[in-house]
Amino acid sequence: MALKKELVEILACPKCKGGLVETPAGDGLACKACKVVYPVRDDIPVMLVDQAVPEEAWTGSK
Figure 1 (cartoon, rainbow, N blue to C red):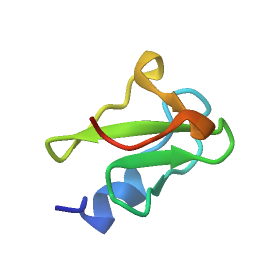
Figure 2 (spheres, rainbow, N blue to C red):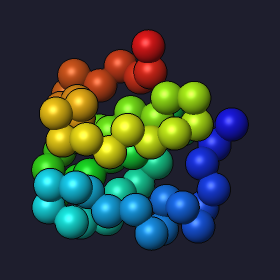
Figure 3 (cartoon, rainbow, N blue to C red):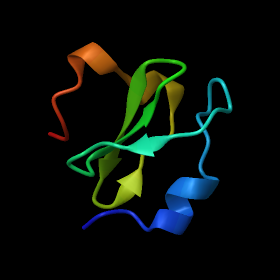
Figure 4 (cartoon, one colour):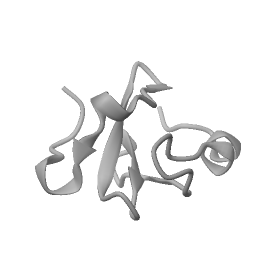
């Protein structure tokens, strides 16, 4: 299940406060400025800087 568009629009990167975009699979929220992806687990975004995955290492939710 994808996140609601309204939720994605109000969320911001906890590190740079920039906007986020949903990954194509809907399993993460990407910050283009920081080049990291915040995972979405059980339809809940994990918005913790220490849980962010570098874009190049992102393989989706586990």
